[in-house]
Length: 165
Image (tube, rainbow, N blue to C red; front, side, top):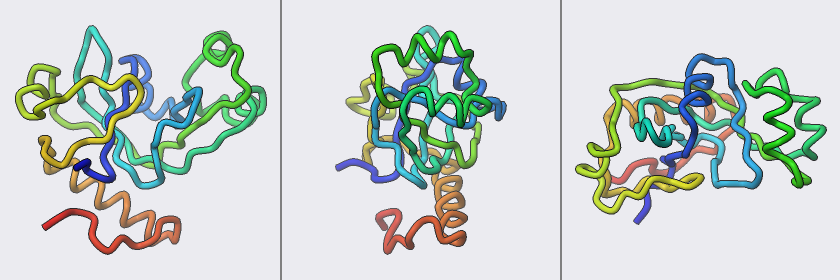
């Protein structure tokens, strides 16, 4: 069984740092990768770091033609135009998940993740966090607070049961 609202996202350290610093407030991808409004996205920093040390609550995901995405959101992307053009070469659409709120916490190295998350495989894009894997108390708090704020703002419907008892 998979834990419904927690996902791990594969990302290079520089972009994780830009997200945590508030420079990058939209996460770009070539296709939809399952980040939904109110999800907790753990930033799995790829090799050589291979660590989780922060994350964000996902806002809405938008899709636009590549040129329109740049025109409308370039100031939020935390990437240079040359990189953007290269990344989206031969793509018609760009997908961007807006970042609602970021957080940091004590890091979990890949070796530590392997010890507390049986069967963990580093994500290629995103993976759903399994219910039987380690869940830091702070993750639960941030997820609950973020989802509650989105519900109070009328942007997210009330969930009957967020976490199993």
